[in-house]
Image (cartoon, rainbow, N blue to C red; front, side, top):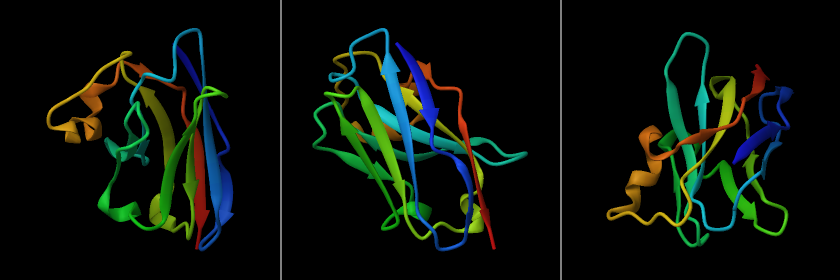
Length: 129
């Protein structure tokens, strides 16, 4: 499956932004999906994940209450709604897809980079103060 992320840009602190990740070339609806981010000079870190059923979501502590992950299986797209953006949210954001049909116990494995085999090219989000 190929992933194409979009929606990044330059926003002021406190603004909202919605990132999109369109999947093609493979099944989408039965894959766990996630967003990660990488700030300049830092490692790639977990942001949000959604189970393939859409019933489970996980968020990194810094974004809880501000970001929302969602999916539209009819459109083969996963979204990341970013509200109250802060300068520390500045990073390249990557979407990621798991192999189809995977279920984990515990499903907190959805927060791990190693769970995901397919990655988009990233979209840059810059939040100015």
